Image 1 (cartoon, rainbow, N blue to C red):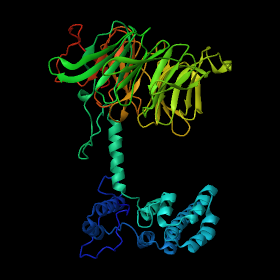
Image 2 (cartoon, rainbow, N blue to C red):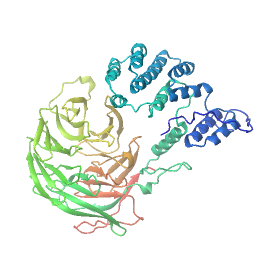
Image 3 (cartoon, rainbow, N blue to C red):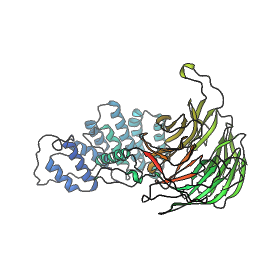
Image 4 (spheres, rainbow, N blue to C red):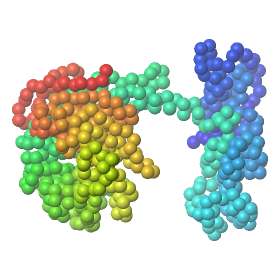
Length: 576
């Protein structure tokens, strides 16, 4: 790993190269790019990749140096551990702000102190601690930690306790990188700056591409754009085994199976097969999970895809997904269970319901804990490794300022507790129906179904706050489960009470697809395949599940379910 800012420790060799003098300061006529900045970035990049002779020639030919001798001296002082010289050079180069200068000195002294401890020069280290670090320290806890390192009996113990890789590791290069923020970028160019600019340009093109749905890198030679024909906007198979409305669907984590839950009191496990050019995607029902007391309204796959949970009324059933055998039947709620969710590590699962209760179960179905008398009747839950989010409707009327509302509504809550400590991290309150929630794969965002006719994206970093809203669909009377999807979870997808599927670009909130094909009634859930970015499924009150993919070869596809074949034509309303 190179953090040398494209500059070696040896001075550039002199070459017999004629300097080229060009008029003006722009890169070329009509350009808004400063020539000196561009050439210096190219010189840095050439040295980063190892073309040092080419970099030397370009310096000589252009007359632009990557950095001054003062910067080179500062760099060498840090890399070689000459701390007094480093501080003197920093004073010559450093920031105008006094606080920044003090911070830079503290960072240099801390590195010096750790290296002295590593070398077991304890008296010298103690002097640095007392005369340099203590007067500059603004963090008593950090100073206490540094002081405790004096008790270390070896360099290895110092490195381990300080989480530091030592003088012979990359610590000096990391220090140089950290100190660079105090030096004007025109004097000392940030490391690998050209690469950073190119990555930013790529990210901009990726975000500007409405239908971008691939993790593969794309070329710098041309502007990037994905065609709409590669987007999953065509039904490749219709699954029609259920006898009543289908309320929930979930893909297995390996993307190879789909579980569906219906008001007919059954759940079905489907095996995803290959695409047949003439008949479409093969999808076979391998297990029908029966004997639920009421409509099945929730599903959850275990992390290893071996076990499937279903919930119906106040009962949870635990099934072996491969055999369809029910191995447990659990009760722990006094009202309808609205959601079940496995813990990410597979050690257990959670159930929640309209009884204002969350129940924690171990993997064998034994009750571990119960949170009761919560402030909301829970409509959905979502988990990652550090938090549980529960959404729902207030259990009791709330007194509010009449001036703040046009009409009286129930107040909703989104509680964000820690699943391990049981402490509520934050509670977000507003008005309207809150029915569903999903957490993004990077744990940064929560997607919240909010009525009427809105999906909200909440940023969970630091203090949770509303980041974006998605509108265009119809929602207000029914629970509609939306989802993240596509490569990098670039999209948000949702069903609607008008029988359509809606897809937005996550970053911009632009509605890019409105897909028709389902019959009358609500599209209750959309689930994107976790392993296949170009595939998702939707389920509806019309008793069917549809698999959506890019249209294969422009062929007309058929329903290949066991209930017979029927012709259908997919219609899509989209941007563009």
